[in-house]
Image (cartoon, rainbow, N blue to C red; front, side):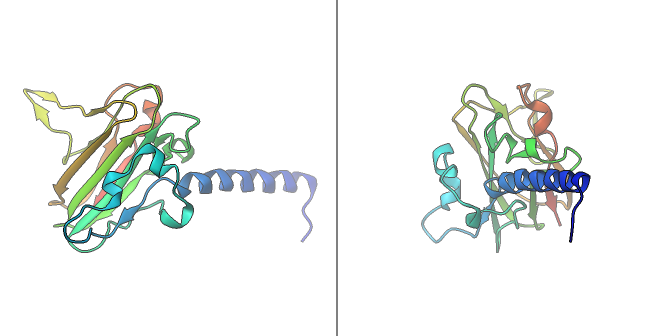
Length: 184
């Protein structure tokens, strides 16, 4: 097949976009099976440095929800040019696409380990219905300082799609508004 000059430019542009998307997907989001008795999964102990040492064979861009009665997820937050910019690389995903997406079943216990790999600013983490609790008439906003982590565990009780987002102002706030927890 011969590709003309204009077609070659379009083809190269499409390849570049696909490469950036693939690079973004390699390290962003993964789920692990339930831990062995007596210990939590390594996922729940992930740090910014350990995540940056992962490779593509250990990662899925859309997590399966784990297996059995417990689902484990990792959300990595970061600023540009970090490969995790946004939440799990949401900076590199079309904003109309829900990203990251966590798929679970009704009745599963869901554990999410969120690490903020930004070097200088806090980020937030909320899940509509499950983790955006009002206290004294105000939304309890979760703030995760740079280099710190936050863990949340709950039982997925109600089927639906719930928004996963950053609830605090930050430099890349618009890129952290369109994640999803899908409970089926």
